[in-house]
Picture 1 (spheres, rainbow, N blue to C red):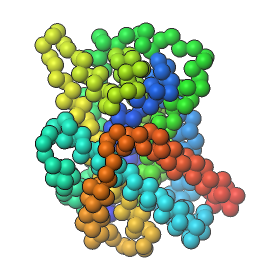
Picture 2: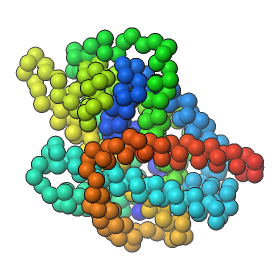
Picture 3: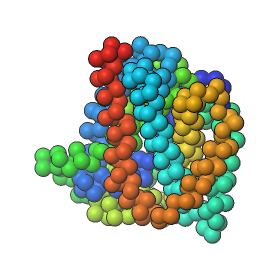
Picture 4: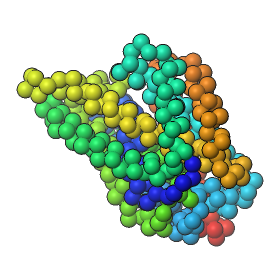
Length: 360
């Protein structure tokens, strides 16, 4: 499962592709609930925290070019404290995988395969991942290059089609009174952006990490603008009061599209984007999770653990007895802060301790 390496460009394309589904799922409703009609501005303040994260990564890998994030953590905090921290990152990745697997399966059942048992859809999903993962991260990188073009083409088409339905009075005016709500709404963008940091837990498979500053800036700016446009379209089409109350608001907004009263049902494009993005998200998260296990247990390979780990994920996902509403509530009220802790706060502590101990 450790075949080959990926370029920095492929790393950032993987991040954009895997982030598409969480952006569409979470950002619209969370931002609308916090910032109302100014929700489309909520992603913008997240650029500050993500630039801080990028600066930390740049500082780390300028010195530790050929190391993974786990090795850097061990060196900065010491082996035992470092292993505890890395173990908590493993638990975070496990939580994310379980939640996104459940979301993915329920969405497939609700949108494409109604009546098919959950356990069957989940089994097929994990079997496909089991087929792809042993081929290595290079295959995931190549797939992401293609999927990025497909998803962005679909996004541009949908964006152009939705313009006719956007009402400017749903997104304007915006006053200085909206500053605090905008900052609160930006939390969800920061939380999704934390996966940018998590990507470097497979740092030993990424080339040219010492040069990540320039490419990282353009990736973060694209990520922020993409999020802002998504929210603008949805809130402009549905209004903030409707957006914050319904799940998959972007899908509902797309359903309003009717071109010359002839072309409808275009929402199938969104379902396709969800499927592609979730597949890359789950595959990469499982790859990262297995790489963390490899580091903690000092294994040379984890191929023999893959099937066992996927069975564990199958059981954990089926074992989630909460319904989708409770899952969304947990994601909005707790997962946002969990992600921000692991993606922003701990990296800042890592950087400070590294500077003090002259390891960075």
